[in-house]
Image (tube, rainbow over all chains, first blue to last red):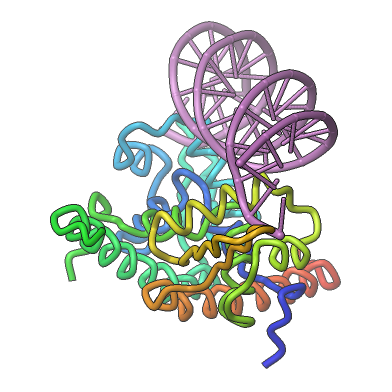
Length: 115
Length: 115
DNA sequence: CAGCATCCGTAATGATACTG
DNA sequence: CAGTATCATTACGGATGCTG
């Protein structure tokens, strides 16, 4: 139970899943399995290739997702969660749950302001 | 079990705990209880007043922490987790745990590169 | 199709000085 | 002590054009 702040590793986890599009990418891959680049892009309105590519590379770098290139023309690249990446699922679930509750809470606050 | 990406609330949770100093602030308050501004600052090497103030205000805004001002000279301001804020603890714990494991994993990879 | 390179605007963070 | 205000710097994200 050594939880000295200096050894705080929360940020390490945070660095992995933080990024404008990473949570959504992970949700898609977790829920719908392997996806092509174009599929992901299509399912994420507003994202640019640059950003999608960047976020995917960062996730790949950390072994969260796997990138498979099919050497053909036109190119085909698929992304999938790694087994290791799936270990993030409980955390993502918990955050999703918490976030939803938080949104509700906020709404209630606005309706009945205590102060 | 409606987990349509469009309803993804992971980011809501993420927005709360993301920030260069928020995780450390939360860890300190969770582990050591109520803290004065100066105590926190002292325990967080590298942080500036500006940043510490800003992050604290944001956490306060979301009801994660409570700010108590003692009207005296010199001023005394204390920060503490709210009950609601404590509901984040399991998530932070999980992330800390995961992060630590991730760091270890990375180190091993570097020693025995498979590829 | 997938992705890289470049340019640009905004937002986040930092350094520093000042104040009740 | 606990801020606020201002300015400088950097990181992040978006738009666009080019390539195998």
